[in-house]
Image: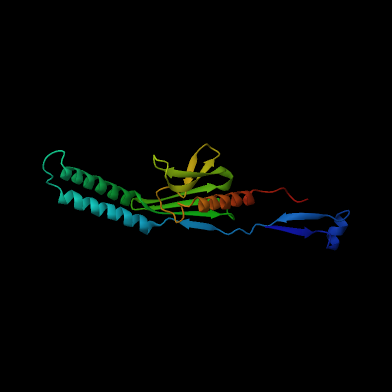
Length: 194
């Protein structure tokens, strides 16, 4: 938000300045932006995968001859069980907090295996890129933001596989990118007012 301030209204300003002039003052009034992944949906999908895998693996345990449909069903059950168990362990809730006042981006991961937190200063962000996760047939599964840091690291924000609401909509994720870029620009120190 820009506020146009007339510095010639006060007597002190008039005596200090020769002539009348106007100056723009930048006022930061940006709110903290917090977003959380949909952990219930993610846990539900992992649990369903685990249960279907167990049912197939247990039901088709005595699969008979090698190369049969029952053996394929058993192996599918084993794979689904492993995927379901792995995603339950490593999956979890992730929250991203963009705080223009403290000029930081905080990413918190809460998993069954523990919690992890990373804080990235606005001054460490070189660029914000729109990225996506796609299949081999070029079908986009999920969009996310990727931070390019000054040290060369690329850090995924609203990480793929975390099921953020709206992550399949390119227009919405582009809006996230624009909003983050506005926060980064607004937090940059401006020139000093004489």
